[in-house]
Structure formats: C-alpha cells, structure tokens
Amino acid sequence: MSWITLIGAGIMEVLMVIALKNSNGFSNKKWSAIWFLLSLTSLFLLSLAIKEIPLGTAYGVWTGIGAMGSVVVGMLFFQEKVSLQKIILITLIIILIAGLKLV
Image (cartoon, rainbow, N blue to C red; front, side, top):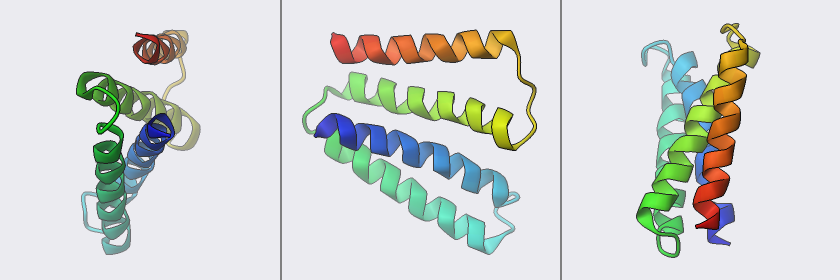
C-alpha cells in the first residue's frame, strides 16, 4: 500500500507542475491555489509512504516520477521539443525507479 501512496505522491507532483505553469508566476489566483493544494497533498502522501519505505528510496522515486512526468507533460501539452535523447532519458528514469523498488 505504501508504494501506491508513493506513486500517488509522484502523480500529485506532476499535477503540481502543471498548476505551477498555469499559475503564470503565481499571478493567477485559481491556479496558484490549486498548486498549493497539490503541493500539500504530494508532501502528505510522501510523508505517509516514508513510514514504510526507506527515505532515500521514497524520495528518489518521488522525484523521479515528478521529473519524468514533467518532461512528458511538457512535450504533450506545452509544445516542448520532443527528442530521442529525452525519450531515452525518460526510459532510464523508469528503469532506475524500478531498480530502487527492487533493492
């Protein structure tokens, strides 16, 4: 269950980045409030996950999901450049996250 919670925290991190982008430097109050709520939710879920998952592993997975998800969201929704290098690096992040779970 703690791994599901950790994945949820990572997904909240990705959604938080979308809200951050849409907040327009925190000038849009609605998106700024959404960012704040997502941030709290992500950190709360991470805090629950680290009760059972070692801190280094949980933090690595959480940031990996956030980094990978942010790159994918940027390419899909914010017209950021898609490149073979990005795809390879995203794949490596997935492999590294799986490796952290296995060890």
